Image (tube, rainbow, N blue to C red):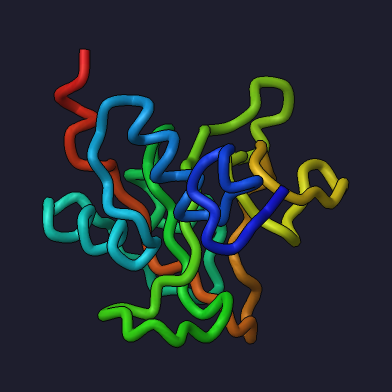
Length: 152
């Protein structure tokens, strides 16, 4: 299940950045723990593609470089109170498009997203959709985790 602050199965669940941290560690990367720090990690490595944040679709020109394995970042999904340097509040990993209908999907830990119309809770595959105009949440950008290109 989704568990705020969770970063391993031993915690009884994951939050979004805990799940991404766990997966990337298992793959041999050394990411920071929080979504905000993961965003800065990708940005400082020169791999971040920032987006306008509103009225986006996966076909928008700012999304042209998106590829499977990229981290996806949102801001404003909740109001953080931990003094983070950037307002990044959610992270996921882009999986690509499904073969049968080209629907974009991501892997994530969440309480509130869905896959093909079925709401779920916890770690799993979810539809990748972008915030609608007027939403409090904004899609901030995406990028390849440092070290992934060097993996064999």
